[in-house]
Image (cartoon, rainbow, N blue to C red; front, side):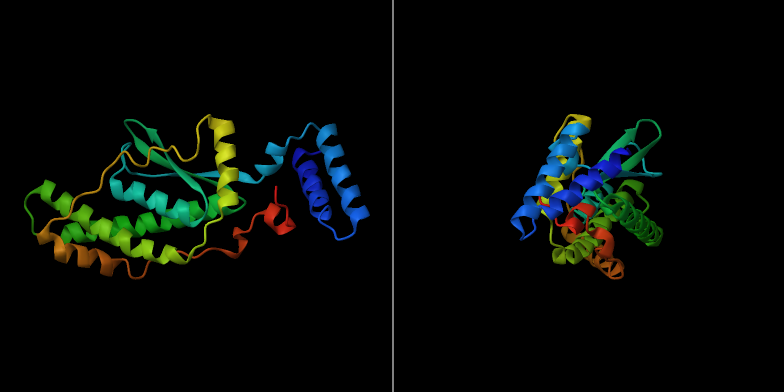
Length: 231
């Protein structure tokens, strides 16, 4: 019997175990335990059965700038995921999202769209600068990008995080990779400290982000939640 089908069947039994009919509930719970024992399915496997991963190749350097890492965290938090950077040293970065159900895939898509928009806006901003000093151009462009992120982050305030989903992701990551999902490398880079003269650059970043937003998809609900299973 297919492993996923077994888990689906166990989840359905757990859902039935919440029945108001005590006999039906007891029978369903016994069936769930019986299937778990027969096929050696652990509670951990049930809890993390619908956790998945999605990766996105990028053209950014192996050590991405702060604004790219901040965008990873922003999107991951919005979709109850964990976001990580796989560094291919000497070549590029790969961004990875881990979440329940469709969360990882939706987060990866949202991140790719927002990353492209931010990168394009930042490039246009640099092209409009009259600075001769390349380092100063990059510094001002980073201030611009951080202001862009600040504006986009304000749209995430309406998102309600699901602690239960994040706990399942943590369990999955800890089991598969051997470290807690909270311990990523997204904090290695530091933000560019704005200066008083950067006021217009900050306003430009805020204005450029006005059309960018995040929307939680209808499919965000995991199969376990759809079944009403709380483990």
